[in-house]
Image 1 (spheres, helix red, strand yellow):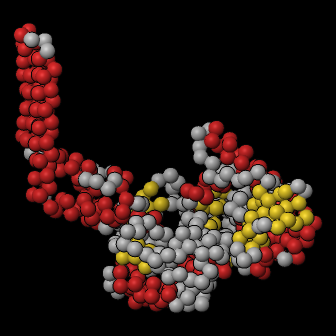
Image 2 (cartoon, rainbow, N blue to C red):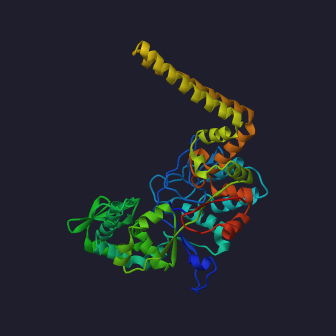
Image 3 (spheres, one colour):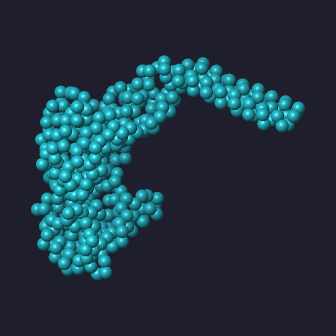
Amino acid sequence: MRDDGASARAWNPLKHRGDHAIDLPLHPWLGIDDTVHVVARPATPDDLVGPRINEIDHQRALLVRVRLGLAIAGDPPQAHSDPVARVRLDESVNAAISALETSLPGTEFTPALIDGLRRAYAPGTGMADAFGRWLETVLGPRGLIVFDASDPGAKPLVSQIFAREIEQSGQTARLAAEAGTALEALGYHAQATPQEGSLALFHMNAGRQPIRADQGGFVVGDRTESTAALLDRVRTSPEHFSPSVLLRPIVQDTLFPTVCYVAGPNELAYLGQLRRVYDAFSTPMPLIQQRATATLLDSNAVRFLTRYDVALESLRAQDEAILNAVLEAQLPPSVESSLDEAVRTLEQRMERLTKEVVQIDPTLEGASRSTLSRMQDDLKKLHGKIIQAAKRKDETLRRQFQNARAQAFPGGEPQERAVGFVYFLNKYGPALVDRLYAELPVDAGTHWVMTI
């Protein structure tokens, strides 16, 4: 899971792999952030990147790319101003799901999949709630607990954390900024760059209002409040406040003591700045496990990569350099050797000629070398024409290349950023989750290629 609206926390990875040294009743859980903003807009075929359909993103809502088909949940009321927890889907979501159904290739799994989406993403349902329902449908049987961070009943349990953030105004931002500076000194990137005096806390009014320290008090949105008044409000009405990305892990680990946090790249980056923040709130920091990553390819695409020794990442370029290299390697050896011999012979003969003509007139050296350069360019052009002829002759290889590239990097983007998981559920059915659970290694730092 990525941290654009949902944070995944899970069981001890050692226990997950069968090591029962820690024999505790542990459960995976996922918290839905209540402060992410949604901006909905009409979808166009020019869109190349969209979050997965089972995610909530700050740029698009319920967007999925399937080949060239796009579906989007219209323009829900308040989508442009309110946090996602307050946005409710309207009737346009039905048209979005219908468009999705049309875009998906029909399989035996399509009817149940679309029915499940319609039940979760129903008009009148909150967007965060719809996401939670859908995720529970997909992963609930695996024991996943989905928690909505906007639940007002949970806020009193962490009101003292909110109060301490006010009492220690600016400390969280300072500690995170210092950690970021230390990371940059080591050559790394600082994910979070909080402003001095800012609180890792928002006031949830008509929208999300930042809070910052100012002359012994605080500025909340565009109004000023005393420390005492703000502390009183956060203790009596904590449901009107929400943590920022710097304080959210502390809140989550207070509500749900966590053994291990399964983090995506962005989460790993900012968690690297929060060790001292955890200490400041006397909260144990969990183990951090990098989430597994994989690209799902069909057997034809894997066969192309294996047969021609093509690296997966080389397919990201939206040109045919890799195809040209593969075709060149398939040319008859006699063609390549003849071209190489022609180049060497040309250079040798022209070098000899240049030495002779300069004895007649030294100014002819430049003309001689220019002639050599033009001849070399002509040979390069001839080589390119040979490759193009090979492409026309071997359309099968071209189709194999295009198929592998379209699956691995649609539009030049990694598969997981451009193709919704719903596409694979439609193709392989709910058993896909079981296969990934059983076969996807959790080794950190390795990207896997899988066939189903």
